[in-house]
Image 1 (cartoon, protein in one colour):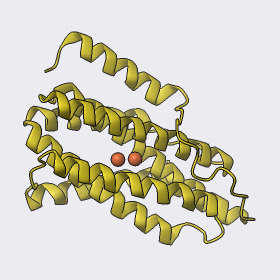
Image 2: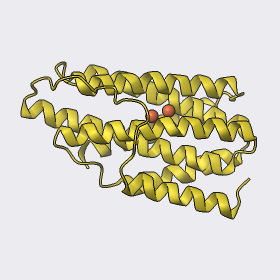
Image 3: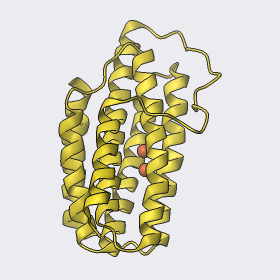
Image 4: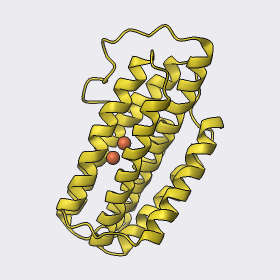
Length: 208
Ligand SMILES: [Fe+2]
Ligand SMILES: [Fe+2]
């Protein structure tokens, strides 16, 4: 349940998500891979795509934190926390890759963070089965989005590709975890609304 202690802890996590460098316990998926000899155009495109992915991870952090604030079952809370740790690693991997490509992170991250936190907290208030259903569908949509990026990233950009590939594997596992914990199937209209808001975020973050 929501209480002041939890709120303060999550608020602190929010500030760190937005303003400090994330760390990865696992090795970076592209560690040991050489830069693939990218043209300036390729670099700009890859940086924009990885900025979108970083922005998605900011949203994932906020969603998980919002959901953890309002989840009821301690097991669900714990599993959300474990998945959030992997999302923190995704944040670290994508941020590093954007910087390596000479790009910048989205200027609108505080806005995405705040709106995603509110959506996550709302999902949590609906009860654990809907909370998990929302999580599972989010991860499924993120997985599909990452697959689409594997077709858009420059072929030579093996480093970004390695990061996106590992993120895809993790997101599929997060979705399956939510289903195992009892996720409800969301109504089609809700899934469509989620797709629409995801498109708004991805198209905006590509440029800003
Ligand atoms: Fe992620
Ligand atoms: Fe995930």
